[in-house]
Amino acid sequence: MTLNQRLKKFRVASGLTQQQVADVLSLDRSTYAYYESGKTTPDIRSVSKLIKIFNISYYDLIDEPDPTLTVNDAANDEDEGEKMHIYELSKMEKQLVINFRMLSPAQQEDLLFSLSSSAYDKSKKSRKNTADSIDSDED
View (cartoon, rainbow, N blue to C red):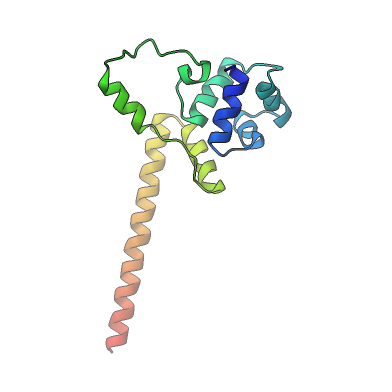
């Protein structure tokens, strides 16, 4: 399978449009379409982003075996089984995942902390409103 065929396979399997991928790569859709048709090939910066978008390894994209894996390496086999793709997410969830993957690890941690804090605050406020409502019903 050629690089352009693998690009299309991973994009379709992820449920993304050419436009969505092109937007993350900061390209025109037609430029990305050229990647999938084999007319041009992505530069290294785009390849790096594509790997993040599709949640794959470099070796998945170039279709060569990862030289760091061995046949009897059970730990690595388990890691591969746990790798998830974004097949059945809504359009908004897919965009969120793509944007998250484009962040540095530190930015990802900051975002998760912020989201967790926000969810905690909202939950705490909701419980307080419920408790206030119960108290007023007792009066």
